[in-house]
Length: 114
Length: 111
Image 1 (tube, chains in turn cyan, green):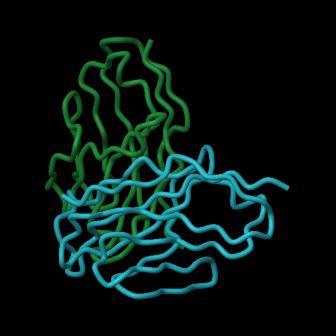
Image 2 (cartoon, chains in turn purple, blue):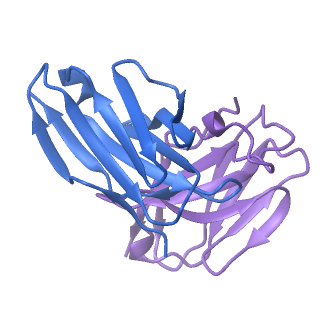
């Protein structure tokens, strides 16, 4: 199973770009990388998913190097409302894979200050 | 929009009680999951189900069981609640190859 490692916490200021890196050294060939965001008293919600290179949506970008042993979630111009815990998840599997691989790491608590 | 509904936001139970946590999803998802979330430990997978009446153990199944009699409903059962099962419990569902959709959690306190 691919274990993920993320920084426990990060601080930023409004308007800055924030990059959160996740290490996943034993990622499997058919594993996707997925990021979730969680606010207090809510369940996590999907932000972005990728397999290799770069993926961008209206919320974030995801950078994945060629060896896929890490990934970086990039949040452009953060605001106070981006204060949350961000989880990296590896193991969704292109073809479904084993559902038991859907194991989260401990997450990164991002605090955005005015 | 996918909706995953957990029947209770807060529950307080006594040690030794049998506890049922209910979860319902409205998108006909094949797969459903139960996680628990504790400070400093992130989300840990307890059980998941990939079809009606099918279940698989996750990382921490000890002290828990599950039931999936209908596709839309996945129940987590604590046969004899203990204080170390005080936690936030999160249910999720997904279609295969799609992201997880979570409920808002049930905060269980066992006294």
